[in-house]
Length: 170
Image (cartoon, rainbow, N blue to C red; front, side, top):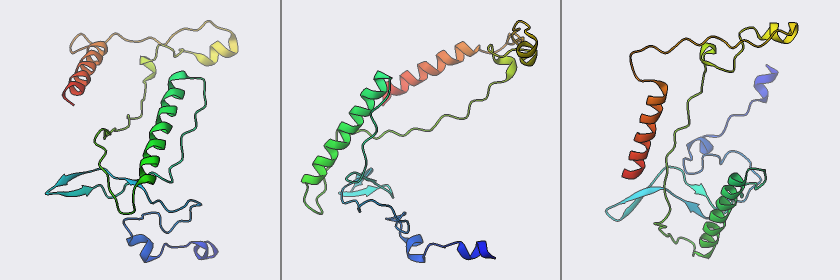
C-alpha cells in the first residue's frame, strides 16, 4: 500500500496538452520561444508535424574527443544551432521564416546485429581451454556458403548500388 501512495499520476491537463507533451514535468530550462517545425504548405497553409524542436533552449553538443571527423561534425552542428538561434532571436514575436536551404532527413536506426558463432572468424572453438590450459587458438570452423544464391559480398555490392541510386534520385 505504501508504494501506491507514492505514485503520482499526471493531471488531465498535462495528459491532454499535445503541444507541450512534457508540460507536467519540471525541467530546469526556460520555456522555448523559437521553434523549428517540419511540415509542408498546402493552399497557403503550413501543416507541421505534431512536435517541433525548441531552438532557443537547445544546448550545443560537447566538442571533445580524439576523432577529428567527430570533432569537426560536432563543431558544425553547434555552428548550425548558433545560426538558427541568432536568426530566431532577431525575429519579432509571431514572425515565421521559411529556411529553404535546410534538409529534412529521416533515418531508421539499424537493427540489432547478431552474429552466429560459426560465422565469426574471431571466435575460438575452445576459448576456455585456450585460456586455462595454454592451448593454441583454433578458430571455429566456418562452413562454406551454399553454391546457390548470391554471396554476402554480392549482396553488399547490390545494397551499395541501390543506396547510390537512391541518393542520386533524392
